[in-house]
Amino acid sequence: MPARYCESMYCYRRRDTRPVVIGNPDQGGVIVGGDAPVVIQSMLTCDTLDTEACVRQTLELVAAGCQMVRLTVQTVRHASNLANIAAELRKRGCNVPLVADVHFKPEIALEAVKWVEAIRINPGNYADRKKFVVKEYSDAEYAAELARVEQAFEPLVLECKRLGRALRIGVNHGSLSDRITNRYGNTPLGMVESALEFARVCRKHDFHNFKFSLKASNPKVMIQSYRLLVARLNELGPDWNYPLHLGVTEAGEGEDARIKSAIGIGSLLCDGLGDTIRVSLAEPSVNEIEVCRDLLAQIPVLTGSEQLFGSTVPRLDDLPPPFDPFSYRRRPTTEITLAPGISCGGQQPVRVVVPRATYNELAGAYDQNGEVRPEAVYEELSVAEVDPADEFISPAPHQLVTVKDGVALPPIAAFRLLAARLAQRGLANPILLKDCLAPPEPPLKPKIALLRAAIVLGSLLVDGIGDAVMVRAEHDPRRALKLAYDILQAAGCRTFKAEFIACPSCGRTLFDLQTVTARIKARTQHLKGVKIAIMGCIVNGPGEMADADFGYVGGAPGKVNLYVGKTPVRFNVPEAEAVDALVELIRQHGRWTDPGTERNG
Image (cartoon, rainbow, N blue to C red):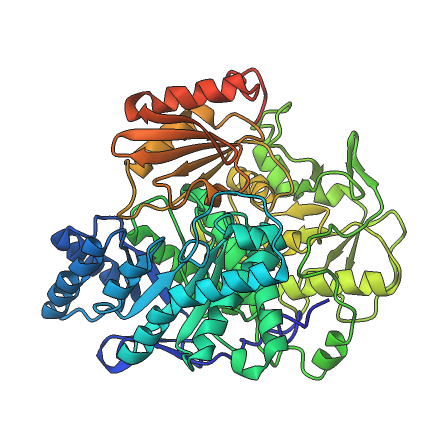
């Protein structure tokens, strides 16, 4: 197993990183990493050739609290216009650092680096063109490919160093080069190796003003990738302590997107990883800033203080890890009965438990035969409530176990410790996860309850811990019930509705992403287990659709390409006909059901 990815699984300590300077910190620039607070960033949705729109949107983002602004640059002409955008912003007294997002063509980056404070490049397409070609590379052939990559990337590194710019090595799951995928697969390991290839070129030229990102639309893949990267950096040495940009790419919109982002970003922040974040929403960019701020505000609440455990921390860290942080495996447990016809543990789905008060307030106000319903009442269960930080009596073999309320531990640490203690005793009792260890008073706002529950429950579920969940941070019974199921789906544990992967808009987007996403969701939301990707341009599709079943991808202005998996099956469908064509495609592949014929809650 690789080195540790964080100092402690039980006590919060922020990862020590070198500072990356982006712009002049005395004149509106930022420091990412080091002792600096986590930096919030977002991306413009307008055309980078439209100077006025870019300036207006940037000012709106900055007013909302955005500290870095990224712009897409698809041609050298777009890159050249960054000069006008930067000049106009500076004239208006706005010195926020600008980041150019570059794909496919190194010459674009070499133009953009003249005008902006940072460049984001994607190693999967900076020097390669993805063709999904299967090929076995000999060591000599692989070395020759690396030399070619270095030759393409080296000029940008030297310019960043000369001009004092920053660089983001931004790997995305699904858009890895054919060279990487043939050797490592489309995996977290492949993502890490792709990032390190480019980092080695930077270091060869003594350039260190860069950070990493390893994004995926699947929170589980995203979390494993960052953990593996940090473990590899730790193995490489203390001077490889580069900062991290965190984000779940193509998270979509609405509550589902916020839940996915909270699981992915929040889990890593709670482990002390992450120096700058972006919540990618298929909504107006300014909406992302509030979510970022709310998300960051939850981390101190959910992690507690370094002093919380006192002298017990070293003893706890000597315990065997309660899960494999780099490869998902559900914790093996005994199957038990919760209620008539409902079992949990073993190979059973992760179940949804509610307190008696919630069950009474719902009073059957849910589809009794559907999937979004209470599956057990807490007070009717035989639950062993324990404090995992103290010695406790071993529960009966077929008893559900949970952390008792009021323990002096943050919830994620408490349930990890419970899993470790049970493993230490050779016990396989199923675990009931709670999103909080005391119902919050006064009640939380729904948007905060959603983030807290998603971070706590999602983090643990992604670790493979948990056989049942109970949401108490949300005081409204109906919202709490739905939130529990939404978290289970986002964490990959249960499926009760369609899932959507939707990229956030940017200057490359070839249709109104928000309107189209709403139309597609209205037609397909009821399709249980169907995953649909909605991508504004070819940059995010087909590769970054990752494991979607069907794809709706902008191919040209007013034209849409449709995919089955990563395979394009229809090209240049007029936008007015494209949603109907997508529905027909789903029907042709046997995945369609009419609304109402399948109960999905």
